[in-house]
Image (cartoon, rainbow, N blue to C red):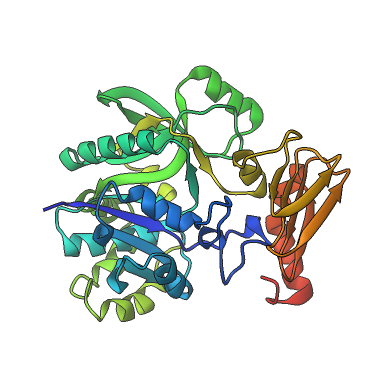
Length: 357
């Protein structure tokens, strides 16, 4: 029996991608790269060489179940974990582990975000298979660490130590998003990796960690042991899940566990978290512009322009800007201040309510 599974986390709103990403249809369901497939679909297809579609589960918000089935018709209802509330990643990882352990006590799984870019898929699969091999034979909590290419202040970092196995390193500590001088020190030391948030472990191992380190989450979800993968599962989750603490798996488990390991990796990875990160990954014209749509750009440089199908845009004298047009909202914003876009959505809500969110 194949004991390998994949869980894809696809419940976020992606507010830094407003007005493209909306509450009703967040970025993971959009064709952000202009390739004719959503980020979720690309992620699903990326994992098909790891395990069959029947072993791929999607963890999402209940509001997105129909979107999941529309974009991934290969999966069944039981493969969609519908969260009734957004309680961060620790509860969703625990629920996934309980569900897979009930399905297969030997389950060994990857849990990964739905909105990342991977340019070198062969190299990615090599690291995933190496991690699964290690976790299958050790009581280990693994995370893929990305070899940093620059002192980026937008990522968390992993400090690694001695080699535990071929290509597998012991994790010494996790570091939060640093200031630029600290990030430069990390890069200079050669001892740090970017934290990609891609985890690999056996269901048994991660549940043991929850029992020891996050007993409140474990205790709440353990009560569903008899109903996981039955018609009564969703009713139990609807009642129990909102009572779990709102905390990330990094804070709840990874930063406190003693059996954490990482595999240094380089596979053209990007955490597609902002419009600027999309600009960095998209094909560009000779002036550094990433143009998605029917666009005439005059004396414009280092700018991202995204225009709906059926519309023409003429842009002149812009430099380092984000221009995102949708049928009902338009964003024109300096790319250097793109981190403010998340706060912009609060202003939009204050002025117009939920209409444009």
